[in-house]
Length: 396
Ligand SMILES: *Cc1c(COP(=O)(O)O)cnc(C)c1O
Image (cartoon, rainbow, N blue to C red; front, side, top):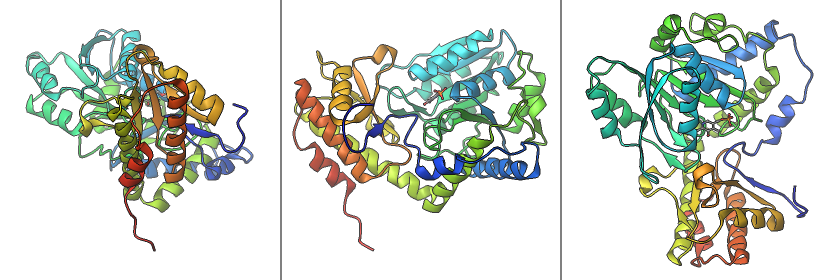
């Protein structure tokens, strides 16, 4: 923590700000995790998650694990060693999901995507159309690539799979899009959705989950990959989670119930609209910086810029980590770093979860100060552009 007085602005794209209401809901003694009080809470929370995933039927299974655990559950339950999957490359998170599949002995084929571009669903369709023997068991896609701040086209990818007449399972990582913008598991015929608690769901890190279609549950019966803690065969009955294998992570459920209350009180559509507004304001500000030869929004196609975070690309010869460290040490604003290939080139502004206009505007103003202090060129008027993008809201 820096020595700056006043509130620290935590602008990471995960974990995100944890609301007091969630923290306080978790500050309570443990319960018997096989008793009726916890079982009722568990069942209610998993049902409410289904409404956010927009699914009627899927089996939601939660794990005491970060998102990486849910990835591992997806690979361990659905496949056998040697099976082939296609991973749509989107950045760091797609590569690590692919690495999980490789660790289980799968044949992983990466569908390449040029940097700063959205996943090419036409190339995906063409690859599947060439797969006469249907040796490809699944297509893996990250909805919101948190390393690049890009939203990838899930509905269009599903349409490409259908157009190729291919039976592959469709796996989608919605960890940093869920409860920030629209995800439609049933409509997009997603067979397995992978979710996590510490992004749009505003929980401390440590809870993740998967949601499996009937087709995915059937595949899990035939799959031979080794698994135990993540084994749905021990956890799921009649498309419902009935066990955690070990002790249930009950405090995450106390927190999750509070987070779901907050999301339901605001209304999911209003939550999405708020994320969109904050994202548009952020992009308007960064565009103004870019107009003066400064940092720019990372995605090239604006339609694919994420509503839950903005990755900001530095001008040549300027170090993103220097801006980040000044922002944190001098102004108390914590930003996400650029991951692996983007280290030093990119910083990331998280604008998902428990966030409002003054928090965002304060952070953007402080980032501008850090750019000035670091000697990075930038166009002026970023804050005014952000305020203009927020638009007038009728007083009530
Ligand atoms: C954060 C994140 C993960 C990994 O989750 P951890 O909780 O860090 O293990 C996976 N995918 C995406 C898209 C993420 O944003």
